[in-house]
Amino acid sequence: MLGEQLKKYREKSHLSQTEVADNLALTRQAISRWENNRAYPDIDNLIRLSKLYSVTLDDLLAENETLKKKLNINTKNIIEATKRQTFLNRKMYNAQDESMELLILAIVSAIIPMLGIFIPIYVMFRNNKFNSLFRWIYIVAIIVLMVSLISTGAWTYDMFFTHYHTETTLVN
Image 1 (cartoon, rainbow, N blue to C red):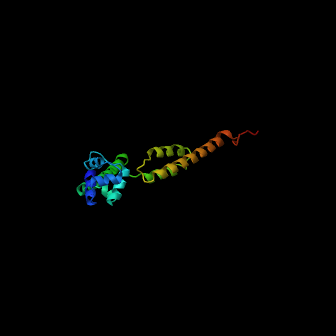
Image 2 (image 1 turned 120 degrees about the horizontal axis):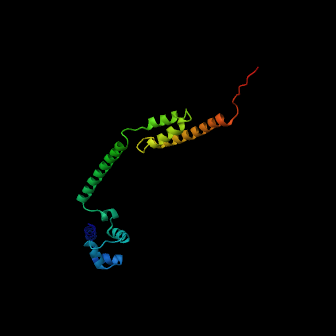
Image 3 (image 1 turned 90 degrees about the vertical axis):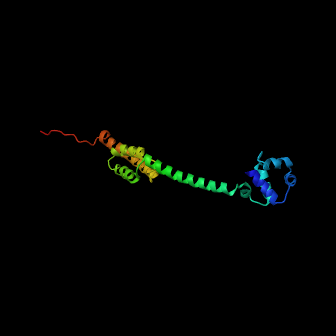
């Protein structure tokens, strides 16, 4: 615990609780409470203690070696569990990476203006963050959608609002 560390470094520095208290402008009872784990020093006092004992804050706050080893083992276990969780999430959402298929579908749908309106919307709904190119898929789908909307609008205007249609007349 922190109290044991404080006591150990105080004794290594050949200081009494009273001497430490005088250096920090505190009472001896405050130092005693810290060393008995009944209270904890604030960060300012920890910095002053580390300077007084000539140790780093890391050393002052460090616990015993067995606790460090347990923490390292737990950290490794957490990292492994996180990797497994990421893999399981990918497997749950999508068994395979569909990036290329979705990109090709979006690009090919630009050829036919009417399909280019609906297929990019489908592609955007089908896309997920586990696809390796998921941002590019959104960008391409939006561009194809905009181009298809413009093309379909131009085609509709030409078909229904211009008078280039020929009329047939009978000649006698």
